[in-house]
Amino acid sequence: MLTVEEAILAILNHVVVSTANNVDLRDCLQLVLAQNLSTPHDSPPFDKSMMDGFAVHSASFDGTGDQKLRVLETITAGTIPSFTVERGTASQIMTGAPIPAGADCVVPIERVKLDESHPETLTVCGSDVAAERHILRQGSTATSGEPLMKAGTLLEPQHIAVLAEFGVANVPTYRRPTVGVLATGDELLSIDQPLTPGRIRNSNEPMLVSQIQRAGGNAVPLGIAKDSRADLSVKIQKGLECDFLLLSGGVSAGTMDLVPSELAAAGVVQVFHKIQMKPGKPLWFGQLHRDNHTCWVFGLPGNPVSSMICFELFVRTALRKFAGSPSPEPRYIQATLTEPVTVKGDRPTYFPSRLEHTNTGTTATPVQWGGSADLRSTADANGMCLLVPKTSAYSAEEIVEAIIW
Image (cartoon, rainbow, N blue to C red; front, side, top):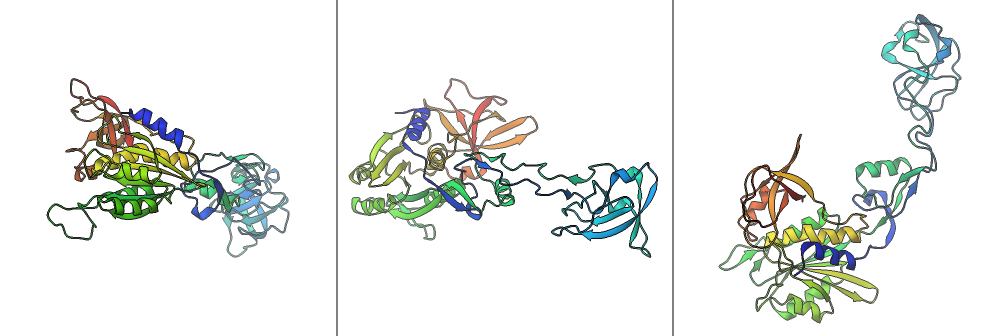
């Protein structure tokens, strides 16, 4: 059996980064930028006002006293000034509008004195005037040609806003993976079917589909495969058309655990089988090379919590690598236990927990978890703690490693 670290390394050594292509900016959320981008123009592209007010020439004010000025025009955002501001004049200006020639200060509208009977004039106090006040100069936030965004950036809303500002309508990104999901087992029912003796509903498919979506992949649900070679073979072939195929169940050592042999019959080469961890020991990983297509295959344990945790550790790592992430490995943080917890056995346990950020750091509260089949308890969790077996219980205030889901 491999350790978790050895399995992660094997996955990273086999999964390759997808090809890059240009994607419409509106479809780029949580894709990874495939190349460095340079700033195509200055930002802002012109000197602009940061306030609603009046643009004035600061050198025209000799002290702190009042001065009456003649209003030349009103400059709104999106228009071009027509007049040069000189001594004794001002232009009314709106936030975001271009600064007129001659002006080097904007006095906020609430700081000037207006006379409704003489709207063509206003009075400004010299103490409210200073060069460069309330003006954002061209290129002050970004200069044409300087680095804009690095390859490997995971595109979040703030990055998309920046790209939109600079007119990057088609963005070079790595491709979003397609991930087939196939649940196996004669015991499984569709979620809309009533329970019958000996049967359970297929919770793994919607769980894995939502995990794939959260990880930035395109999920392809393939339904339920019966515990028969004929049914498995047909549905495996369909799933192998995807970039990744996830099968849940059928990878242990029972007489009906047919997945590894059917994958081998389909040409999938095993990379490893079984991990030194709890839950998730039966995990299977392999790959298929066919013509110009590669599919990486995970045989996940049938027990739902095992399947969930194996996805977060191993499948998410593979999807990150494929999608171009520069750091695809599981992302551990340190957390302080809020209560004692005991783990049994000789394998590291990934224990469902509630992780919370506080002023003093992250805390972890293990949920009341009954093992790999206890899916209900995970509704109280938003992550997991890594608990390595030891002779005594973990105590409250002990620091452990954790992963946020």
